[in-house]
Length: 442
Image 1: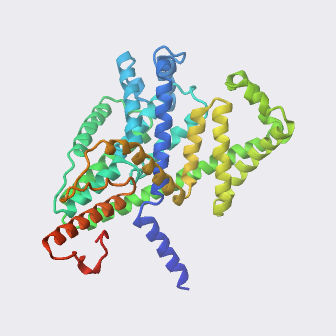
Image 2 (image 1 turned 180 degrees about the vertical axis):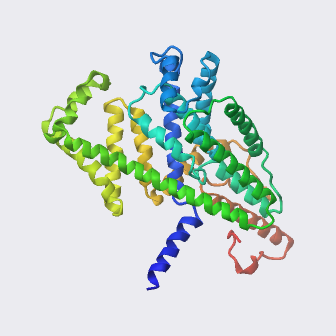
Image 3 (image 1 turned 120 degrees about the vertical axis):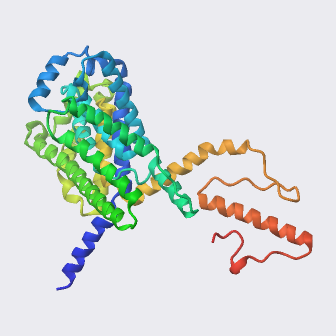
């Protein structure tokens, strides 16, 4: 009788105590911001035809469509060339800052504004990946996607270190950014630019108000309870958004798989043959001919695609089978990016798949990236003049590795230096305090 309440309490505590999947949400943040950033940079020479005044979907047509469906787009606030260029460049900047994890809460909102503004301006531009990016840009606003692998995480660590030293770090950039964006949001609201669908304006005002409340509680609260309550609310919202992202990815694959089953070309095993021979989707015609030369291979790929997409949502509770299908789907999207010439669609889907990657794998991936960055920076340290001990012997340079290894190495060097000084003074070797071995950290 008591087991069920204990399990319920454990589940509630797990949902409220922490933001789940910090590495997964960081990968989603990096993946989708990088996808949108690369798309904007690649289409920069063609931006006028895609979203600007020179496009076939004229400003008047877009204004009529938005007036009927209430979609949000800041590009229709003005038909001037300067406004379009400024908003396009801002979308690039916002994507880059979200990729780096600088002020992720604010940048996620601005990233959403950039995505919705450009995509809703020309709704017929895209290859399927834009729909995924459109949805995920909204979901990212509700997540705490800057807890790891971000400039925000580095700033938080430095703030904790400063508090440990007795300092009181203050954030001036955040309140200034909040004030400027609030003023611009107020101007847009008073000018009637938010008169369409209520969801996006309400979301913008809600996030702006939540940021103000977060800052006020952190600055004025005399006890930690109010801030802890806000943390619980933020964790619940984050975990709910993460669940929605996972459900959205499963829904995409499930609907795609079941619709494929109803098609006659997928039933007879020839569906993969046709897109490989369409001129628009054939950047490498020779490669497409090579893949379709074997009828057996085409049939296996066709049936395998349907089987993987239909089965994936049902394998989430079996870790090993889920990981195998996840590798197959990521490989499939990588092949689509190369063979069919759809890199941004594939990047968007791979970023959506990343929410199911194991945490252990993501941590190892982060460690590999850290070592790679240390290896890239290592020539810089070789050019520095070597340190010397009291006796003139050079101190070995710190090895490239983790921070703990570097600190231990320096501790051993300092210990050896103390021993040499003690021996020269005739006192004998220095015995480490508390029985600790030389070089161990307290």
